[in-house]
Length: 293
Image (cartoon, rainbow, N blue to C red; front, top):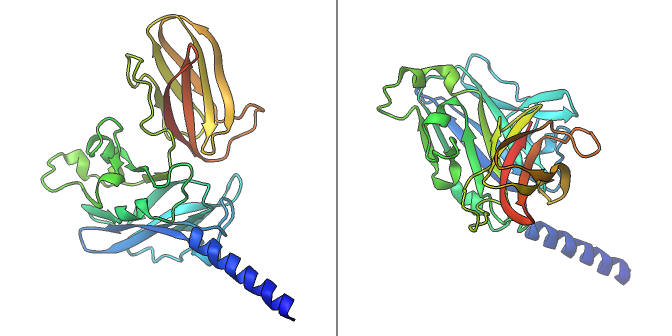
């Protein structure tokens, strides 16, 4: 009897340690339109969550919306690859990043979007590969032109807790069109390569990907100052090489390659974040992240 009680205590202690070490991470993005109508999208990391499938215990699934009111929603993958369900909650296991397209109905501009950026630095976020959400972006037609990160043409959520779109005083008639604001993409990623570059290489930001995010194909453009031996590879979030795109000597000038979202074996890669690594003459030059839908 004592042995059973001891074993039970050990199991309970282990369970408590596991929950303390990595409790659920829950992040909200709240929307409010000009009439003060409100709605919210939740992003949840949980050890019990699945990337594919509907985690009803975590809130995923059809929210039974009133289509006469302001609503925001996204989609969750019920079964790969073509089975989707409407949801206001996106739950993933801790080793998957978030990339969701937000739709909306019955809204009046401007839209106020708020979130708690302190949650991007929560102590219980996975310490590997980064330890905090260092890539949190809002991306749509509006934020391509009106944003706080002109190089990326996206709104960087790590720099504030609120944005109003269109902002007060914006006299551009285009910015006041509903279709400019939705659909809207939100990305939350722990990017181990963000900000990594080799300063000995004179040309900065030599990789450009378009479109990014992409569904079927993306073009990867880069520039070489001199004839060089080039390795261009795709890696997943865990650092595993997915595909080698090129491994040969190229002449100087501009070069364009395409990635069709397939791995080295020709199988489709699952939706999520990936990283393009450029190596020139044996030296790691630059990495850039991209999102596959």
